[in-house]
Image (cartoon, rainbow, N blue to C red; front, side, top):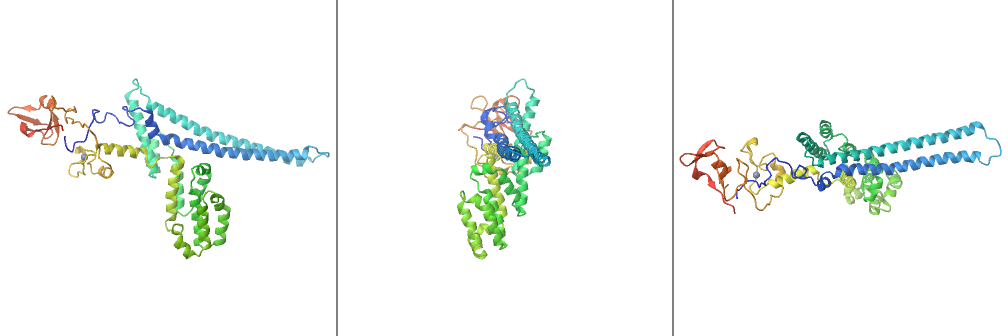
Length: 424
Ligand SMILES: [Zn+2]
């Protein structure tokens, strides 16, 4: 077997990707690669529907209250009512109705926007997945390019690179296909937390409270713990107690009693003892830890997988090429490197990945890209390190006096110098 030669298949290199690409058009690809493309707008639609429903209920109750006031004054009245008083009541009712109508329109608009986004993404994926022989190759290529740009964009966003991601979206005309806004929100919350400000984080928790409760998340508890810890550090016990009573007890009493006990303990005991017993409540990096926990919970809320599709694809691609002989090759210039894994710029990514394990490997002829065999296309190893099949040698490399031309080193070599390779 050719040592150091990456395992290859009959698909010539560059003929298409195995994930996505024209060699794979399976529905399961959408599920695994584009999960977040649907999951995020679905979640947004869900939260907008729930919050909108609450707004509508509130508006309806206000209208009912205003109508009640008016009815009370007029129904069963035996004496004439002052015109001004009635007009005031009527105007109040009118205002409530107008507000209810505005709330209704706002909710409707937001929900339609999210639904449209999902429909648009469905069309996009359908277009990408469709195998259409009549479609010009140019369009196939641009669809493929857009797909990879989308995955790169998701990866950039997860790394916190909002500005490059936005540029990529504009460049590839992918507006509405990637949810940049939720990552902008994450970034805003991160910056605030690093500034020791929990307000945006708590607002986010309240906006998503329904789903957070459903997944049993402690994020609001952790964020509010920071505020209480700050008050305890300042030894502002009355304020800390008021805060706990107003905000902390309602969210912890039934779901997280241990957190409540712990925070009450830290308020009750002297600061020095609390610092010793509740190290994480007084730790210096507690706001950073809070942000890390927030991001974990936010990904859980949107059901985003731990690794982006892009990083999984890249790692899979590298691992599929990695052999036990691979090591960083700093001698060969990058444009002459034959093994992608051995490139010094790729090696740091490849180092921790497992080696590819494949049975029945094939040897490819470096010149013709044909598969070598033990019959008419026997592989020969040239001194340049390249393997050439017998067919290519017979097709024009033979020279007089038992010599063979080596096209890589551009010189003639003796026949014996090309070593015959054997399949094990
Ligand atoms: Zn290698």
